[in-house]
Image 1 (cartoon, rainbow, N blue to C red):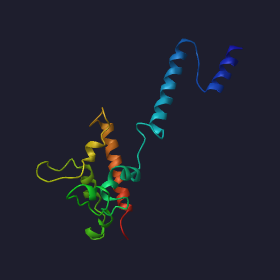
Image 2: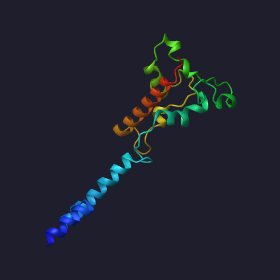
Image 3: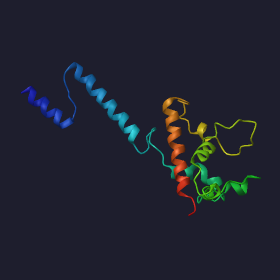
Image 4: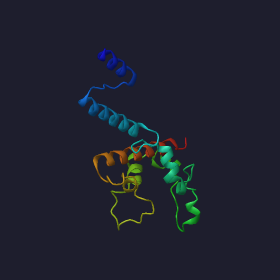
Length: 158
């Protein structure tokens, strides 16, 4: 009779509940479920951001929502002339300069003090707070910048 009760409980709950070690297993499974929800959830810490949402959030204020360099910051910050992102391919012989765009967004490979940089270093700003420069944080930064590059590629004038 106990086997049937446990069997029914397993089917109902989806977790194996056995005496002493079963409690630990139950909480371990709950922990895994929580982590999966955190990683996959829409507002989760590790949820992937889209290139468009990052563009609107961090680029549009200078480059404009349409990418033509006409964001509001152009009119409020003296001397700021944001690049027209829609003509990058055109200005590069018809080829989109993915690597150059990636490096410009990341910003970390430029030698400070040798070039005046008005654009934020998103390779630093996108780091996961508290876990900066870890393998996971660097992977997330790379994904976000790559998504931005692909979004900017999609903005090119035909």
